[in-house]
Structure formats: structure tokens, C-alpha cells
Amino acid sequence: MSDLRRDYFVTRLADLRPGAAAGIEAVFAETEARARDQFRREGIEPEKVKFLRYGKFRYQNQEHTTEVLLDGGAITDERLADIEKAFHETYEREYTYRLDAPVEMVGIHVVAAAEVGKLVMTRREPTGTPAEIALKGRRKVDYALEGIHEAGIYDGTKLEPGMTFAGPAIVEDPGTTIVIHPGNRVEVDGYGNIHIHLAE
Image (cartoon, rainbow, N blue to C red; front, side, top):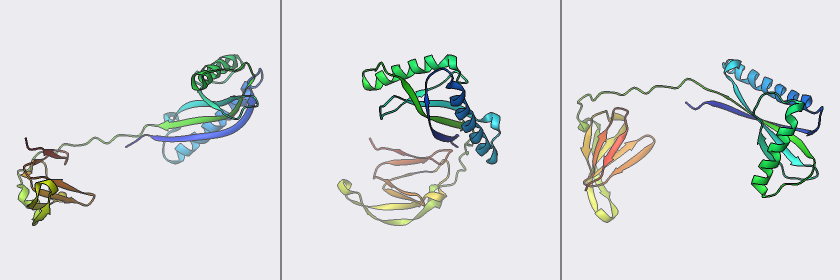
């Protein structure tokens, strides 16, 4: 039920100076086209794919990079100064200082995401079936501080909405085992969730 997401990383060196924007924009556009094509092959219409653009920048001759969100549409030469300013602010926030040095891009990061249809859960009404239908048997269970008790053993796959029973009990399900301590009460809701009401 989660939305679809892919992250694309491309290494590309570029100085942030006039004339560089066209090349940077071309890398983003090419990466986004590749993403749309991959989603299209999985049955997702291209117009449903949304993108977040990030640039990975560093001061020239430094090793560490800082990722900056590049919102605002296409990369143009007019935007390069604002992008550089955003890098300085992000770098200072992460490292507590900034440098008076040229900035270069070392790569891009594109997040491509598409929403998928969500399932709607249907609540089931109680059937009136007694919980004894799910009872597989009884056996002695050691409840540690509460001692050894004979517990009802229930088949979790047979529990239905509205069923109730009290501990000591064990619910055995293909994916888990639920321990119901003596004095606690169990109630199954309309979605098959098992609620354990603790003894006062």
C-alpha cells in the first residue's frame, strides 16, 4: 500500500558559473526521463510521477559534499546564484562555518515518486459465533510470576469479529503466538484485531 519511490544518483562535476546551468539541467532532464520510462514499464502513467531534485555540492578542493534541495523548476543561469547561496546556508548549518571559496556540483540526486491506489479496509460485523469454535484444546502453561495454569489454546485463523474469551489462554497464529495472562480478557474487533483488556 506504500507509494512507489526510486532514487537516482548521477555523478557530474560542474562549476557554478554562467553557462553551466544548461548542462546541469540536461542531467536532471535525462534522469527524470529515465525515471518516467521505468515507471511507465510498470504501468504508471508518466504524468503521475512527481520529482524532487537535489544537488550535491562542495567547496572546490574539499572532499565532503552537502546535498541541497533545488526546488523552483528548471536550472537556469539566473538561478545559479540562489543555488550557491542555498549551499552556503546548508553547509554552515551542518558544519557551523562557511568558506569564501568557489562552489562546484559533484552530482545530482533525483527522487521519483508516484502514488498508488490505496486499499480500503472493510469492517466485518460480529457473526455471533462463539469463541469455542476456535478452541483447539487445553494445556498447562507456565506464566512465570503467575505460576502454572491450564490455558485454552485458540486457533488464531478461526477467530471472528465479536468473539470474546478470557485468559489464561494462548492464541496460535501462523505468524505469531499471543499469550493471554490469567484474568485478562480478549475481544476480536471488526478488522480481526485482537484486543487484550488487562485485569484491574
